[in-house]
Length: 193
Image 1: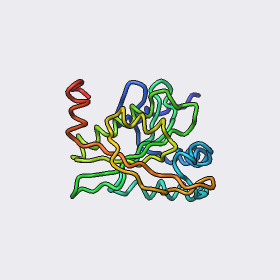
Image 2: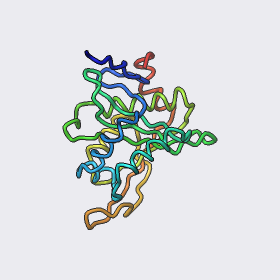
Image 3: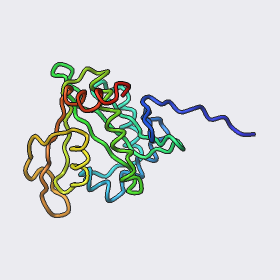
Image 4: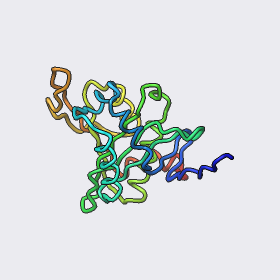
């Protein structure tokens, strides 16, 4: 007898992907993806994680109102391909940090990340009443910096020698976007967005 699997929660939907909350069964995927060498480099991950640490982390973030963590899943097959996170949400100054991680290089250059970023920015500016969203990208990640610029983020500064990785120091580029910039870029062109 076939088991009926419930339809996934689609918190925010795009054309190629949707965003959904983390589920307990995502811990194994997150654990395995954490050790992808390219992902470790792009995220600057230096710490080693156990399965139990990942499970504890997912439990802890579920109740943290200073962040919104979402799985990026493909519309065509519900496969989880990454995560997008608004964190360090400051409700007084109406600001937050955004970060994204695609779990596998096979999913790079498919448009999943750009669409996920736009959905999360829409959530931040439209539902959480944020005024500013920022991010940090390492100077060696030209591809990501280019995508962020295309999404409307502006370079605001450089933190020199921020990351020590692979026997060298690397700068972090700080980029940001304001609510009026986001609305001008996206809402005037597509009011339903």
